[in-house]
Image 1 (tube, rainbow over the protein chains, first blue to last red):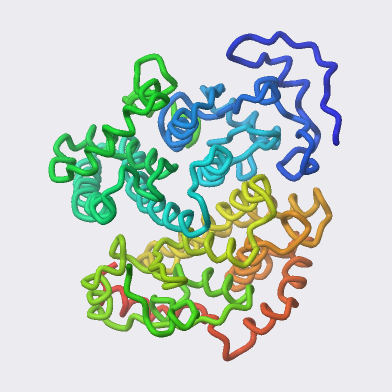
Image 2 (image 1 turned 90 degrees about the horizontal axis):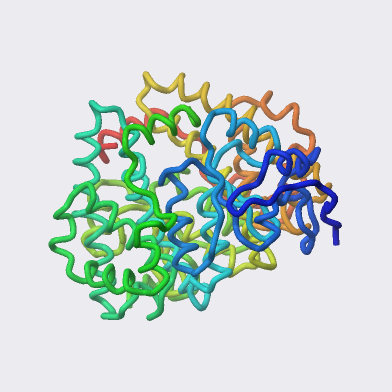
Length: 269
Length: 230
């Protein structure tokens, strides 16, 4: 098992890693393959080593929000390192921390994972939210992909140019009301169970509930004709971990406002 | 319980898609690499598509769709993941799966850009091709070369064949079709390409007469665009 560096001089603050620690944890060559199956990667942060996942992204929903929801639902405490400037992104890139130069990136269990689905799948598996066997997993994956297709339109909406916004909103409304929500309402109707798959909570219940909230923000009457979806949302929202996450002061992020969009564009575009 | 065709009940997966690469090709590759025989039902007219939708077999009114083991699955990743798990091409544990997923997603991102080239309007095509070449050269190929360099093994993850090696081989062949000089600076990727191509099931799939689909025919794409309205 590879030794972890332990000789650096660091101030560990409650929520963040200092510049010094960042520098000293920089490895010459880094990447997810740089370790044995049981060893820790050389550039694992203190928070990562303490066991908490560390989320690297900007202070906004974007593509990280599903991950925040899933971790919260699983009762997993996590830290966030917010990118504030283009330089912050470049630093992560130059460290070799981002396999495809992109965020989200999550440090978890000695890995630096990028790609939303890779991160979500790992968390779901680890916390028993991916079904009991491969057939349940296939159904969960199928349902998840539908949620993500609609969510892609929704999460991009704040970033759409002003003149295209109305058209994009119309598209979201149409797809939500005519394609996606009916599909999931039909699933719930078909088995009459409390959760989408396997009669117990799985990752896709979380993703769908998040999506329902976010679509409703843009289209307040979107859920009118979907009583079973509304019931699912209520049920899942009352689970202790989710209830806590829905309260003010949690890591849950609000709908991106103009300032937030501006920050994100500065960092990523 | 969903409807299953006779072929599916006999045990062979049945693939529903156009007679084209599109979003089904990676599934064909994976089944072939796993040594799994499969049947194909090609969508030829809008009426074929409408029937599938009307019969309620497409959860989101979209293809690819695959009938397999009593399920009617849609969504490429759901289908790929099931096949990979069933045929032991998904790593040995959650951490290996995480790496496989991460590497796969990068390949799918680049594949999506390539697909956009094919289906984009002719006037947009040149710009999209430039983007694909730039990302291939500067972002994606270096990332995978680096992985191979870091462990010096024959396969991307876990020192044995997994789904992502197959996805990567398919991608490298498309890169080569686009511009063979793109692969030149990446010796380890070239070696992986040779190695995976030589595996018996893959070798067979690469030969003429297999179910592998040829490069897109622009004329057919334009005809399909009019008929299916994309």
